[in-house]
Structure formats: C-alpha cells, structure tokens
Length: 214
Image (cartoon, rainbow, N blue to C red; front, side, top):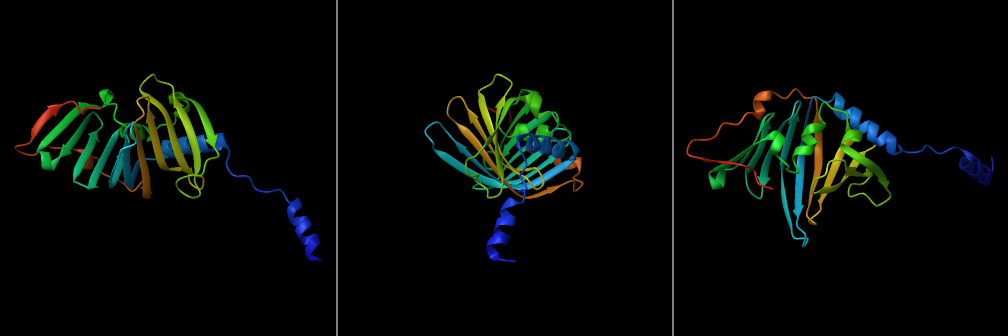
C-alpha cells in the first residue's frame, strides 16, 4: 500500500481523547473514597504576597478518618500530626508543641486529610475548570477549583495523573496573595497503616501552647 494512502487512512482514524473535566473530578473523588490510607514524599513551598518562598520536604502519611502525619526532614526536623481530633505541631529544636482541635484548624495541610474516605469535591467547590496551561509535572492534567465556603482561600489548583487519578500537586491561593504548594512523589495507597502512627505524646520538658497559628 502506498505510503500516502497509509498516512491518509491513519488520519481518518478517530483519536482517543484524554479524560475530560468530569472524568477527572469523578476519578479523584472515587479514588479517595475507596482509599483507606495514603503515603508519599512531599515538597512544600510556601510563598507570601511579595513572592518570598520557603521550601521544605519530608514524608506524609494519611489515614481515614482525619488522621495525618507530616514528617519534615529538610531544612529542619518538624512534625505536624493529627489523631483525628487534635492537631499537634512540634519543632524539636524549639522544645515547643502547638495544639488545636481539627475542626478549628485552617492550615493548608488539612484539606488533603479530609479527602480520604469521602467523595464530595462538588460539595466543597462551586466550579471546576480544566486548564490548558503547561503542568508543573509532565503528563498530569491541571484542574482549578473555587471553594464554596467563604474563607481567605480563593482557589485550589490540582494536578491529576489521568492514569490513576492521584493528586500529584496542589496549589492553594489566598486573598492576601500568599500561597502554599505541595508536590507528591513515591505515592503508595492502602498499605495498612496503623492508627498508632498518628498518636502524639508530648515529650518531657516541652512547652505546650494552645493554637497552631495561621
């Protein structure tokens, strides 16, 4: 068969389209609804309104219901952990622990915890946009979401792996111009984490302060 005819027939074949916006949102919801636990390496980048940035990294564990453990390794050791009721933030070098009830905490690390075992993105956000911008992580799809609740959080952008609907990157923007970015790698799910991992005991001689601060 002549090459020109082969090329013509190839162009006539229907091309397989990637997931659309509804597919992505449904996929993320269903993925997290089935998920019992989640762990990943993370990079966290916090920027203020003047675009001054601070980068940290470590390992994250999540477990249903409402349990999480952020182990910071670089540039210094820190721990941000929730047992489902109380959030603790511990900096060993400061010999200090901050604590606060989960329901009162507005920290940007909290939203991911609430996804596990639930499927209500459409209840939490009023609108979803599939962006054509180049993703930070190659091969992901970029979705922008607008929160339903009236807080200082103005929008959330997530990068989703269309192969398994895992969230690979989150960008949370605030009304004061600040933002928090989280990039996840080496993701594992349903590995059978134990709830004891999320228990926190205040070390002897460490000061306890009420309130995490925002």
